[in-house]
Image 1: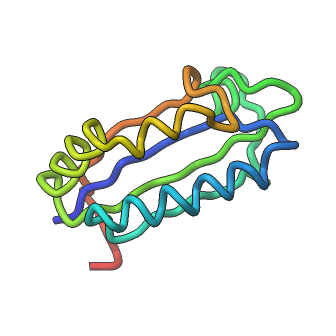
Image 2 (image 1 turned 60 degrees about the vertical axis):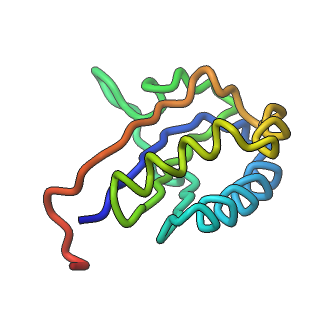
Length: 118
């Protein structure tokens, strides 16, 4: 069964192109480490909630949009090995200047319980 890393990220609207550029590089890197699929989705219908919503979850500011993304791995084991390699890869040190506030990014690992593609 595959394994999913999910992310919700606040990105300044004027940094969309820069975010896309970094995302393409990271997608190639994740695929090099064994990822099956990487999706980066720029919000265009993200309603304001009364209790919570995507924007509130990352404290998005008026000039920011929300990106919803995920990385599909063949298994949690492959993902865990990839994460260990990333922690020790000197190329990751170059990823410190991101076009968003990494402190407000939400992320987690998920085991699919329904998958219509399988």
